[in-house]
Picture 1: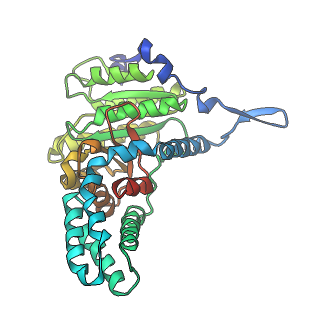
Picture 2: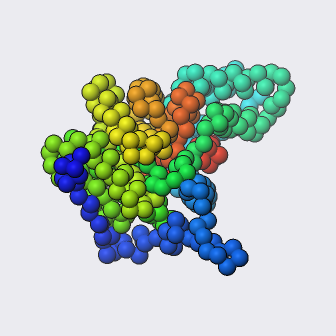
Picture 3: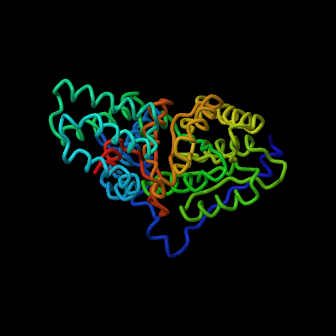
Length: 370
């Protein structure tokens, strides 16, 4: 381990000059905030960091709610697909129910809600219409939105980051090649840094030639530090282990662990993820706090099998859906949550640094059904 450690380096990144003002934390690190009671200064979270991480998650979510315009514009293509529903319901009458509902189901299928979910929603609407509970097009649309919202929230899974009780919290990011994994990790670092979080990155993608360099660029852009392997024989579990040790010893709040992209059908590479998880847990029992899989939203329902396989191997705690701004398949969000029971934590709705948005079910429903 000592030999491996000597081949690892920490790079203190400097934000590019033009972005320095933009990326600088808005206030000092939250972990250093003091609270004074009766003249005695003490840390607000005496027993671990549960309060710090809880406030952090709540703050990130509240800011996302205030930035609903990004979510609204990000799902514009899905909304265009579903706009036909407004036309169908505008002149709806009871005698025309079957035709209207059939076309409504077709609109849901085109937006990748999936056959099972689409049928479930439409059957529920049909039952309420025949029972006399829904008597106008507006009531049907409101019921449709409630039905989708219920599907997204009924599992009781929390969409906020769950970062545990002590520093550093460890987030491991996994996924296939080309899904936007490293970019999503960089944008997550940016969001955390804006809230004054002390972030350490771990370049655990030791297969792709330019992976470490790509993550180093993100470290520089976000003003984070990064641990990289300085040798071809260094394996990902060693990189992540050393990064978490350094995070623990040097008082970091969060360690973001990148991993190599891999197909879920490649057994040996999937087993390496298990080794990465074990290596992190040896340093901090119970870590990683979050294992997030990044999924390419343009693949629609094809992402379901990927998520199933990764979940079986490492036990996913959340999903990050990327590239949804370029896709009309926003309904896949509902299918993934309902069928796998894994919460969506973030959605990528653009190319900008701030376009990785915490997922909010109500904002999502309002964005696709305007």
